Length: 113
Length: 217
Image 1: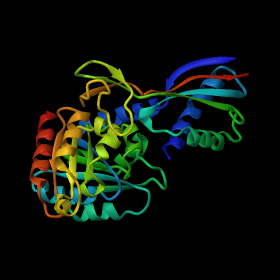
Image 2 (image 1 turned 60 degrees about the horizontal axis):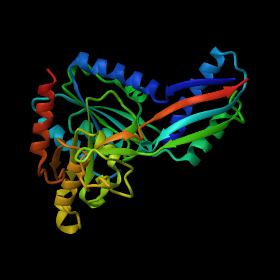
Image 3 (image 1 turned 90 degrees about the horizontal axis):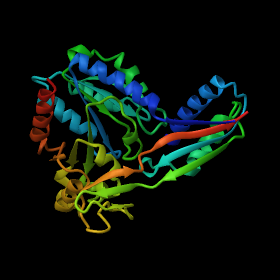
Image 4 (image 1 turned 30 degrees about the vertical axis):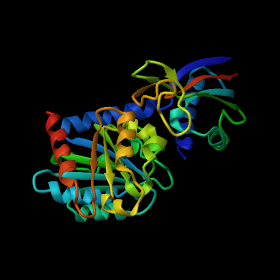
């Protein structure tokens, strides 16, 4: 459900920028989403479709680029993407980790005329 | 024409959260954002907290639910100043909703403010409300592996309450494994094992709240 709030924020930012740049019609928006946010691509698409109706973004494509969650092990310093339910280091089995990437949530670019 | 933005989607929320945090600091209130699954016992924990600390700390609660004001009524009866937010379907509180609720909250008269988030272990983790600390509440009936399955919220939290300890004899919950998982996700996390129903462990949790409030100054 938080996909709706995220897309509403996205549209506020894109439409403000488009009007600053004298763009009348937006054709695509590229969004980078880290895996840590648990946002579902289908739900993002659906929210985008619903919320863009009757706006300058109507009919635009939403390009979602997912960034996998990457952790760094604090014991052996290896970087890895956790598999399944555990955050354990895949190399040394240690549990102490920090997030390297996967927390991104930003608009990369948009296109329009 | 292609316009490169690189703009954070939650920037508007983060800005609003920073404003909330400024208000909290000016008023000298410690603000705790409570996050859990539905039914973990957040409201009962706060009722017990209100009774335990009510003698010397003035407490308020902003309560987020999809519908109804039942939780706010319960906390008012326990002695807290409450404001209920009904999100009407939205799965998390955001900084703007909290800012609106703060207009109804007599902040200068408070020492501690709890924000009882909408019951959900995923979405609320992404929205900073301006709080000083997030606390994740987990009940033993939910199973040992919740921290390992939903590490995001536990990684963001400064403390964890493992609630409903009175049900331990009736569940497969393994306290040792859960503690190992939690310490693995984040070092130096304060962990409390409580039964909000019987009152077990409430003293330790309240001691931590009192110390955290004391450390603000």
